[in-house]
Length: 499
Image (cartoon, rainbow, N blue to C red; front, side, top):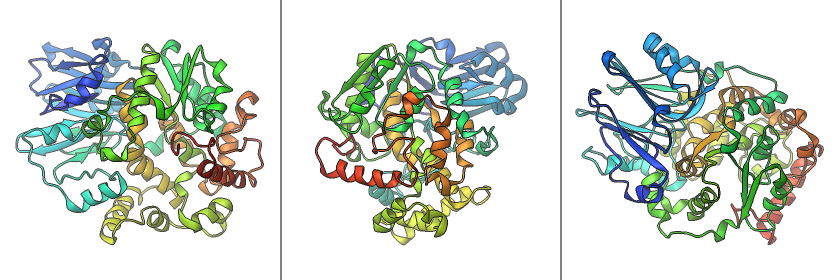
């Protein structure tokens, strides 16, 4: 599994190794670097992952991609600046999905990407620090683990945990944008809410600048009938693209309208891709979420898409874009939630607070379980200069359902096949949109502002939920409701999620 292993290794991940043996490579640390560990990365030039100076006992290795001073994978500059300025150099990291270890003289620390989407866990015990991208590496090691019954119950109910919790008392997940020392102490190196802010209509230009960091021939875009992937397509050129779902679903006929934007475009049935039969065994090693909650078709589809275009291993994803463009994490569920979605002005006229939103979204938790969740939310957001709507979105994005459940498909599973670029996780984009008024975002006003600078070719075609950008905002939720009913009850309207 892609990532960094300290105090343990990937030897126990037999099904992962079998699945990805042709596209993953491993490297050991230098003998003089007195840390037991292993680096797993996508096959390529190792020089882009490591730098060292044995004479001065200086070393860095990185798993994943990163942007440093807005340059892609400039490990030489990062290494030089870390050697000169130590932790202060990390302020120049401008994006990525990665984890790294750096050593200089007697100083050694680990750091990850600003959003923490490289998804690593750690244990500190008498034998030192243990780090891995999967809990399985600890479960099969000599690390003593005890299950927390409350957290294990939440995991089974929800499919994910939150904050830095895992089901084991001894194991924590690395915080977003953090430095982790070998003594187990941790601190943030970045403040996402201090990143640059731009006007929403400039988001498409921001996307272009990020996409164009990567060679065009390497770019791969899964496109659906939704607005997140289409916004990326409207921003820059892509060589390869694909769409999956039922043939006449809400996704494929819409995505097909943009097939000529790609040099190569493929579409296929989500439910009909060949499976190996061991997808659940891969999930058990790869994901914290119980394997039975993840459809085997996800791994099978990503495997198939990767086989079509093996050289295009930079995969752009609209991961969590709907939470920032449309405020979907404010949905309340149940009949009250449907009323609020149908009349989103209610989010302004009859505001709901964070406690109410979480209570309705996590209604299957016991009072003790919910208290643990909400206390963590309060701890992570109480000092933020955001209203409750923005705080809910911020928390779920970085610490909750986004980072701990939705990440399974777009980041963890697909990320084994190539470098994932979750473009809405760009710190500038995220900080811009998290500071929008979510009582207006939920009424589509932010969406319209973002798309104001987009070519009409991309705005005149309806989205999978039935409306266009030009549809009056007051009408959009009514059309969306009709489309949801069609997708649920009428054959041919389903997408991969409800096929």
